[in-house]
Length: 294
Image 1 (spheres, one colour):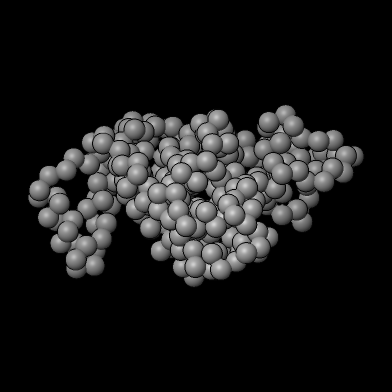
Image 2 (cartoon, rainbow, N blue to C red; image 1 turned 90 degrees about the horizontal axis):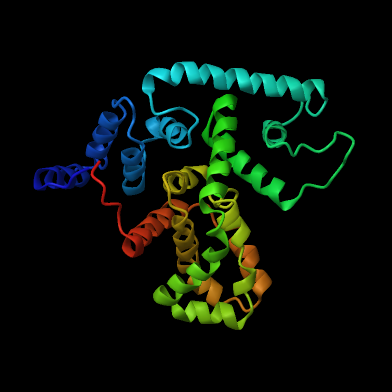
């Protein structure tokens, strides 16, 4: 979205009278009329602005490759996705991996394992490993956001695959990145976490591997996932940073690392929208906005 004085004036006016995002919604609607859809512009829009809820799932499906850029193929491809979903479910039922009482999230896990060629033998009763638990946490969150099981499965699968393909090499470095930004924003808190031995024990898997699934309510989580899906895993660092900043008084008052970790794994849910908004502000402060015209 190219900046111009007229648009800036209109945006400021709309926001002042309580219609924040009116201009952005119109801009997104224009982008969604393109055929083929411009993935770079859609990604840039999602990085710069919150996605309107009425278009969020559709944009996610396009950016994750569930649907192709060519809009006139969406109905056809959507039909293929549904047929493939049903074929996989029927195969798992025949092999007795699932039944009518199996929770959808476990169905999605078996489907994902089958398609990834890592489905264990039915006779093997292995305890769930960390990777499976990460999958299930993301699946449970996506299930709360997406109503249709077919869309839900494809979004889970493509979200997890894209996340690991794009950001797998970056994940081990995110804790150090968090330390760096915390030293910029609140060095006293960083020193305290170091001194009590809590820093290495922070819930990095919950924050970074699960992308805050199971930590934030879905109403807040989907705004974080907008940024992840459109190309930024760095937003996860700033959400973690803002959680630490928001509860710094409580954290500094806690001298036991296990107490710190327990609290951070179960943060209060009523303040998460404000935390995500401040995290996005910090992310833009340190990383800037994409400069591509939308």
